[in-house]
Length: 209
Length: 319
Image 1 (cartoon, rainbow over the protein chains, first blue to last red):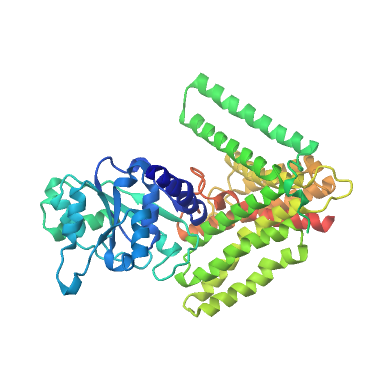
Image 2 (tube, rainbow over the protein chains, first blue to last red):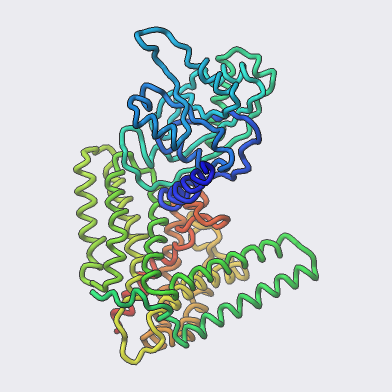
């Protein structure tokens, strides 16, 4: 039932709209690896998540969860429910209640241990179009804790021009989703977190040209 | 305003059109068969495979064109508007516009359905000034109202230029289909469009072929190194001959059809090299990737963008 609903939403409504009207160029579904993965990508627009979910094989959508900041996307019940229902979002709390420190990565780690594939935007927030800021270390830490999970580097072009931060208007603009193959080895995973983070960032940036 | 003809189908499939379309399909079938036979005898060489691939894409373009134009005028107008939309999107995505131009672009996108609606209802006075006058003023107004002056000169130029090259030009084909019945002319408005597209595309093919066979002197080496004087002249002569021969598709005399074909050989070439020059400026090979293996829509309609306006207005002048 939910598979049928997802098929209608992603393949019959959103994807044709994104490709015909907005001009998003989708990758081949076969570019996604089999098995559990951790997808990291640059982030410029609210279009990013939806476009990524539209490019995944429908059958796999139930196990794929974009990570979103709880203080922004779950700031009210309606928004949170919509995100969870349509996008399969998992929320990450960045601030503890009453100033208590929390460990957001532990929560994500738990989701991965549950067998979920995550979509992360390690820049932390949507940046200016076609610009990229230094990645945060979350993806590297999660990979080190879960060495069997595959890294999928993704670079998205043009999304920030179609729908930039702070402007809800969608303007048709040609966009592209590029999916790369990670070259991370077990030796890389043993490196310090900062080095691994840089490695991941370079894999994403390497898809730009 | 008359919407009765929304439900009239295949009204442009006159005997003349059927004959020419049949001829084109006949040529394509012969060529396709010849290539496959050559492949069977000589084995799959690189050249043969490439030629077969090109022929197959010509099949797609021809079938797509025939269905778009000849199914019904209502459908043709919408389809042409969509082609203009995609071409405009390709251009504005690549031409380094600013984030502050997004609202101006929105106005352009909204102008597309309106311009093609004007073509559909044959409101000539409005159709001919809407993009060049009203939108010209409106776009400047919207950009200035945004208040971001850094780089506004380039943006104003690019956006209006792109509107003219895609939206305004292609809407002429839609208007051509909407022209009222011309006394003594039986081939129909679809025939005019068929003539326009056939002359434009075959002029490209003729130029290419003559250039490959006899090309020596480069005509615009810094823009398009493959274009030669010999190719251009050979293409011009072949195109004039073809235009003269197919003059029964137009509501003008054969002599005028030949003159029109000659003018279009030149303006088609201009459209082609204009888009080439811009691609060279941007350092890209194709304007888009909308047609798999064929670059973008803009790469396909570069000659047609100029020719649709030239063809429409010269015929209108002679009528």
